[in-house]
Image 1 (cartoon, rainbow, N blue to C red):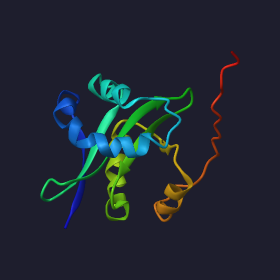
Image 2: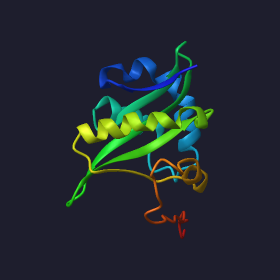
Image 3: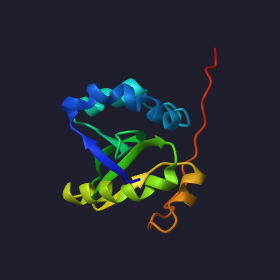
Length: 142
């Protein structure tokens, strides 16, 4: 069985969204809720983010993710904003396609904010920890 990844054109995001939703939700549920899934959908439809789908020869979907091109003052990077799915070990090699696309988009690097387990999964793919991001939810003082 072969697994593939494909970028979805902005005009086709709504056509495939319901099939990708549960995979994006898996990842987004572990975030600090910076973006809702509806935000991600809208940003993909408006070409401010890119939707990616991982699937097999029979078009069974194994995962989905979203990327965003970030223009820092000193370089441009491709940020993997969210990435979720099943059987990641079988399709993590497909990240090379996102890397190739990022090069084509004149990015110098790929970055992602991820859980520690993801770091371990990407050993051998030249991803390394650059820094650690900590978060704290603030409560109101009413």
